[in-house]
Length: 81
Image (tube, rainbow, N blue to C red):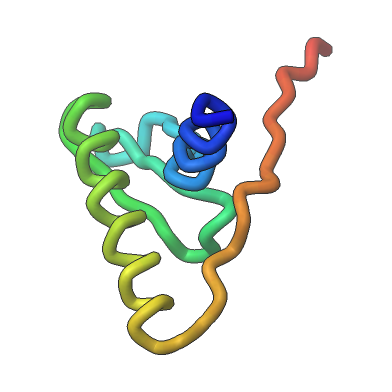
């Protein structure tokens, strides 16, 4: 039973993100399950570090304001044309 609780807790702290090169040479990263939660960085690593911070702050503000935190329900697929 403890493993299930650990997996559940881990799932609550995981968010899917989308990362892609921006027009300005920076990497853009978005978290679809948190509308408007976006960031960027000069490198992929910097962009990922920045979105982690943005997600943490986004959730903290929702909790501080007594608003519900959206669940992670986003699914990604690769479509071959």
